[in-house]
Each structure stands twice: as structure tokens, then as C-alpha cells.
Length: 516
Ligand code: NAD
Image (cartoon, rainbow, N blue to C red; front, side, top):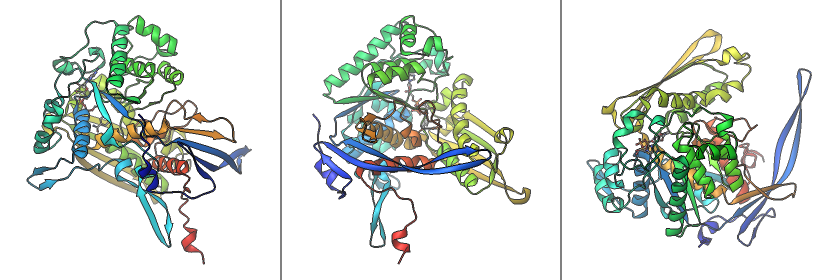
């Protein structure tokens, strides 16, 4: 079933003594340069060191299936329709003319990586061409929704995609109907009840888990897939009341499902089903789906979990702007973020319990950036800046979310600098390409192993924090600090694929053009 795409590998060939192709594996040696810091009284002793790593990438491209929870929502329909438009090169007309499909907004498909210098010119290639990656147009989509609408009608309901494109996609999408899903009304807003006409009956949570597991196994078998990835893009749930006795270990979690404990959310059932079926699970909403018991299940199954909450517009900008200010030695003192939106996500967030989940993930996104600078923030108290999040549901706005942010910073000699940022865009047109990146990168990372000092190869940690560039509140492996800075998150991803391909990481000194 695996397709080895020679073309992809040949679009850029690395000639180096530290990189070899061993059958289907690409193996690269990498000398990791880091600095170990010791504290001596009030002084730091810095000891630079080099550790030898090997990275081994399986270059076979698998046939991948993706199951979306919330397939009939704005993100689910925009992603599925957008990929089909690209796959069949469907053009559409608006009053502005004829439009071609593209993958703008996708890190893997539409951004580039510098691979080196040709004479004095820098050379860039698409991100997706550095390592063999799945073509998004080859992904088989499936999934669940509590609403029974087929994807063509659901796309019309979403009001995201241009009318003419909706019409052209209709023949493809009307055949796609979400599977019935698990619906625990207590976890999402009461106002969602009127669309819940496609639910798995009963309140036995173990039976629900088993049905979802069977759905995954059937989907894999019927579509002849090598692997399946699950992604939650359903409504934001309230946080479950986390308790080590209920969620703390894999065993307790499964017992709690068996006893249909009220604090087991639908999203956690999906995460468990994914792990038990050997599939990685990505959480695109802010709630605490990935409880410790899920992580243990994933670890045992050798799959990844990643979360939480897609980092699309406002938060991406926020982590950039705050990084710029703090990096420039300017002290942010207040961030006030207003949003108003009129899509179903906004409707769901108008219930306080669901809003609280969102508020939490939106608020933590600059913490580590502020904490890193003890010159600006010498005390805990000063770190406690005014960071306010307001979200209002305004149906007239549709999916065209308005985000208004005011940043107030302290500059030289007690002066003030204020930024007012107004961001308008279709939320799902940002989220869909980002979801695609999450899936493609998660799949790629399932094919990478690494080893230190010639010891045995191991896979990445179960909690895939490599994907943090795409997540508002990135989940990290225990004991590892979360990094929110967008430029560091992107550099991390770019450097990883370069290292795996045997390319040199760029330190931006550009000595090859400066010397001589
Ligand atoms: P949406 O409301 O249009 O879609 C969610 C879908 O999930 C709906 O069709 C709903 O019927 C379905 N659903 C609800 N509970 C379900 C369940 N238990 N099982 C299966 N389906 C269920 O919302 P959206 O705009 O597509 O956003 C989806 C999620 O992504 C939201 O939680 C949102 O907060 C999150 N998110 C979106 C963005 C963005 O930019 N669009 C950014 C970050 C996070």
C-alpha cells in the first residue's frame, strides 16, 4: 500500500557524508549544539556542549484517512471542500472574476524554507518538499457530527465558502454524510440542542466508546488505509472536573468510562477510541480532553496526542506582537482582546461554561514570553498584567470574525505605547489549512525516529509538542516548558525537517557572504 514518491525526494538531493538513504529510510547525523548552565552563587557558568544524534525518517508515503469529530461544522466542511477544490482544480466565479483553488494559510503547502545559498543568492523551497510528505489531496476524509446534514448542505449552512464554489462542490459533498456521534448536552451549550439529530442513543459510555472504535476500524478497512488520524473540531466543551481517581491513569479512565461517570466528556471518549485503535488524536478546541489517562493510553499504543485549540488569527498575532515588544525591551502592561463573531462556534461560546474554556487558552499564550525577561518583569506581581478576553456572539457577523485588541506597553522613561489592532477574517478559512498542517505534520512525525549517542532509536514523546506553532495552548510533555513564541515555534519545525533531511540549520550569521 505504501507509495514511495521518488519525485519528491529528488526535487532536492542532499550530498553529504552525514546523510544516507538506507532502503526506505533517510538517515542523518546531527551534532546538536546546546549550552548547559550551572549556577554558582549569583553567577551563571555556561558550558557549551555537543551531543550526537541520528534521525531516521521512513520515506514511504502511507495512504492516510482522517476522521473529523464535528465534520459537518464550519471547519469540517471548509477543509473537506477546500481540499476537493484543489484536488479537482475546481475554479469558481464571483463578482471579482474567476478564482483558482490554493492552499494559502498552510505552513506545509504555501510557505518556504531556506535551504542554502547559491553564490550570494539565498535559495528557498516549499516546506513540503524538504521531506516526503502526504499530499493533502490524497487524504480520505470521514467523521462524525451530531447534526445529520450532508456536507453539501452543511457547507451552505456554514456560509463560509463562496456561493459558486458551493454549487460546484455540491455533487462531491452531498454524498458525504457524518456518522452519528456521542452527545453529552451537559458539556456543550444548551443552544446546540436543536441541531443534535444524529446521536448515538443511550447513556452507556462504554457502548459509545465501542461504537466509535468500530467506526474507526470500519473506515480504515473500507478505504484500505495504512493509518487513520482523529481530530476534534467539534464544539468547545466545558472543562471536565479533572480528578486523578477518574482521569489519572489509563486503567482508571477506562473504569470511569465503564461506569459512565458524568465527568467523562465526549471528546475524551473519542481520544480514548483513537488510542485504542492505534490512531493519533489532535484536539482542536480548548477543553481538557487530553487527561493523563489518555496520554497513558496513547503511550501504550505508540500513537501521538496533540492539543489544544487551533492557533489561527488573533492569538498568532498576539504571540508575535508580544514577542516583538519583549524582544525590543518594551514592557507590555495590558492586553485587551475583544471578539465578536456570528457563527455556530460563537453561539456555543455564548454559554459561560464553554467561554471559560476558550478564555483560558487565549489567556495563557504570552506567559512564557513575559516570564523570560526578568529585566522587564523582575517580580511575580509584575507578570500579572491586565489580560482581558471578551467574546460576544453577534449572528449578523457570520463566520467573519472581528477581533479588536489593544496593547498598552511601557517605553523609555515611563512613556506609553499603545497599539490598536483590528483583524477581520473568515475564521474557518484560516482554520482549514492549519488543520491540514496538523494532520500532515502529525503523520510525518509518526515516521521519524531519533537516537542519541548511537543508542537505540526512539519515537518522539507521546505529547507532540512539535506542533505548538499550530496550537493556542500547546500541550507539552511533562517537565518541558511550553513555548508560545511564534518565531521559535516555527524555527523549531523548520529546523527539525532540515535536520532530518540532512540540511544545515541556519544561524542567520551569513558569514559566506560577509567574509573575504
Ligand atoms: P462549528 O460549530 O461550525 O462546528 C462544530 C461542529 O461540531 C458542529 O457541526 C456540531 O454539530 C458538531 N458537534 C458538536 N458536538 C459534537 C459531538 N459531540 N460529536 C460530533 N460533532 C459534534 O464550529 P467551527 O467553527 O467549525 O469550530 C470548531 C471548533 O474549532 C470549535 O470548538 C472552535 O472553538 C475551534 N476553533 C476554531 C477556530 C477557527 O478559527 N475556526 C480556531 C480555534 C479553535
